[in-house]
Length: 237
Image 1 (cartoon, helix red, strand yellow):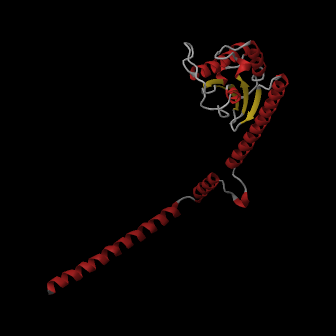
Image 2 (cartoon, one colour; image 1 turned 60 degrees about the vertical axis):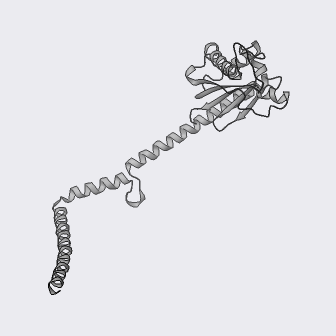
Image 3 (cartoon, one colour; image 1 turned 135 degrees about the vertical axis):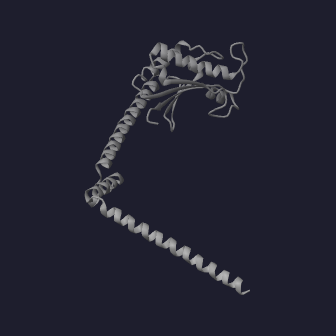
């Protein structure tokens, strides 16, 4: 029993020595680090400190660093440019609305402001005959007036075709999907080929009867759902 106790006491002593040696090693490392820092040139230390401070954008007396001043100046310039663009876009929207309202005799044009831009809503009978996708003469005149305002518009022009829930089934249009997309594509082609709107600005989409503005429970409501929407999306959105 005595031998076993002696071995346990010796083990406890060894544990204490391990901890003590770790402490001595850490102290030795600390003093070597201090000696190394003292041997550096004072000028280099100051340069390093100044570089770190400048990078963090913190200077004495609350002044901004040169880098931060350039960033702030660039940001303010960008905000001013965006504000001017938005003002120009609102002016264009206003001009288009005023011009089209003066030409709309039957209340077949409406306007809706969306989060992404301005939507020009055109009833389908102003542009097309029933079940057709060829633009009629009256629609050509309206689209020419609309498209003439897009020359200086900085943004995208999205043309969407919509139908009511009355199904169509012909050789050319097996469903309302084909009819709605064909009408949208024909409008895009007309604006590009006849008015000169750049194709890169435009896109076409057909939604059939999936996005009604009102329930299709009456003939009047179905007439409202048969429409084309030309959405102007500013470049800053």
